[in-house]
Length: 92
Image (cartoon, rainbow, N blue to C red; front, top):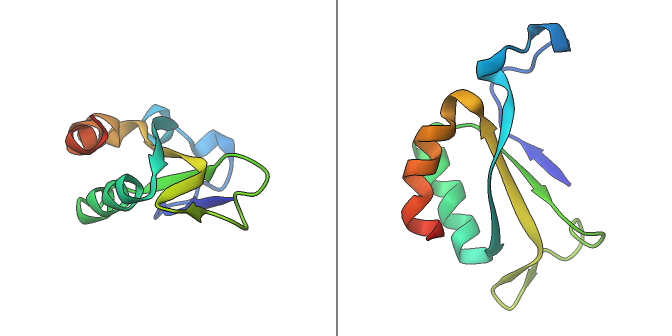
């Protein structure tokens, strides 16, 4: 399951430029860290995409404080450095 929170959706691939490219930011395995990362990105108005891994990801996300399937978080290339700096404390 993918959640997309980007404000502008390109009409076609020709409209994508290097700055709009979506790049991998991090993978979170813990629900608390997941909530914190989403909050930090949202507070700083950094759009992000979340992709859950695994077959049961859409049905059973949380199991005793852990995410049942790891969550990959993606951001725009233009926001990557800022996002990486902001979430560095949470992830490390």
